[in-house]
Length: 437
Image 1: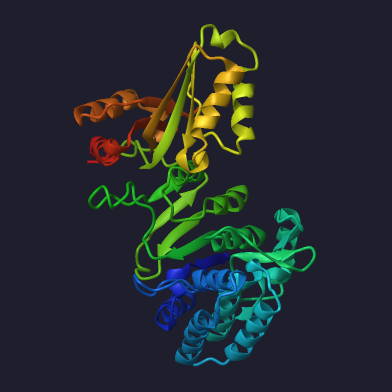
Image 2 (image 1 turned 135 degrees about the vertical axis):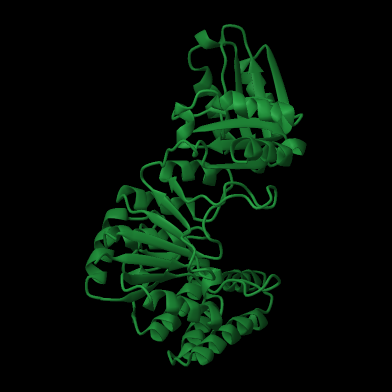
């Protein structure tokens, strides 16, 4: 019998009712031995996530604003769950200790991590499993870098002593003993690290959706679900905004070639989406999905004999790095080069950046195109299909969309087109209809 690691996200553990659902799931599958949990998420649309409330407590303290009312909301939620599940883990005592640490100047990482810590304590007691603190196993340097090999060894040796365990996600410990959190959504990473260390057969990631959809349901009505997708394809879609799983969670699972199964806590009968090492290519599976983001700026440079000018790309990248920016894409031609930048990193620095590029690189012409959107059509099967690009471009032309930029990765797994922001929804619908419907 294999080992499964199951991670349950915030909506899956938002209250006692949801926790009762996960108990049925876990006890109904004997292969699930290790469970990673998030902090309680939203119970309804206008509700607050526990982690957000914890961050808010820290913000209030920093600005010398009373935080007690917010902290009481946190206390009430946890104590209600403890009572409704009929367990006794002295949550009141734990909360008093957290309050004391806050008063003594606890770090923001410590405060933010307590939602996972308390939830794991309650859920472990409810399931009858051991509680294993993530700080014992997941280690960071004092600068905040994950110590991967040490973490892997500690998880393996620690969990070897536990037949079943519940582990809080999202955080670990630095060398100096202080708490260090991953970025938001980091419980996915915890689950992947555990799955890798125990050599799991499957890493199940339970959330509030039944897997990935081929397009954004806010744009395409009832898009088809992705049944199987490779790690590489998922990375491409996640980068362009398709988010169900924290993209950093892919790496530990991919390294150990452990499939990830995205499942729905509220619909456990659904198979969900399986993420595998090898792409699934078939006659009816040309593309895996479509995703995109708005609000990019393209800086286009024109210079005669640019291809013969040594160091041009390096110098351009250096200027952008000096402004603390990252480059999204660099489409090139013989005498032309463009850099695509996310407006969030530009943050009002466009004019100064352009002036610096002109002063240092002396292009014959420089154009700036704003309000651009990037759309990625992703699929491992595209490289082996004649006419895929033509089909995509024809679909956009028929929809009246003007393509301003085309870029394709060396893997031929994706085609990225740049269109104006106003054509974003129209473009995604047109591509979906051409390839899926």
